[in-house]
Amino acid sequence: MLGRFDPAKRLLNIDQADVAGKDVAVAASGYVDFSTSDPRLVIGAAGRNMTAAAFKQMWPVFINTPVRNWTLEHLLAGSVERVEVATNAPMSVFKAGGPPVPTMDCRSRSLPAGR
Image (cartoon, rainbow, N blue to C red; front, side, top):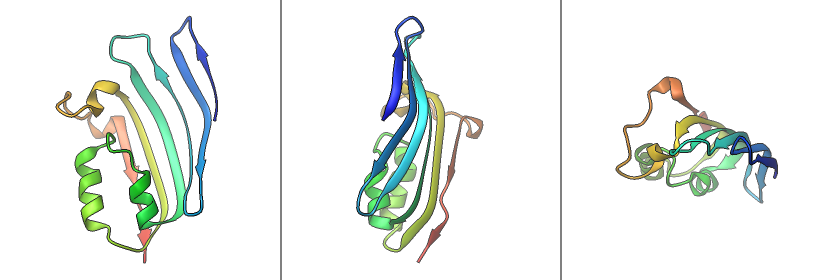
């Protein structure tokens, strides 16, 4: 992971984060802004060519939990050719019982899948 923390701006920059293993390869970049009482997470991540099982293990439980739960239940086998996830939201929206999830202009998902 390549990044830096700017204490004056209270900003954690994530220039490049890579997670790779036997069945997984995901790259991400973004930042976390700690300058307010509710830190903001702005991040984009992309992965390619992974099994459905590997994809389900990589999806953090706090990122859009209802959609994650539906995916865990319905994506039973196969492969994920490409996945892209982006968010620009305060951290409080990721907490159970937190504020309502932002509108679609604040986040996006793309999940083409194959057999």
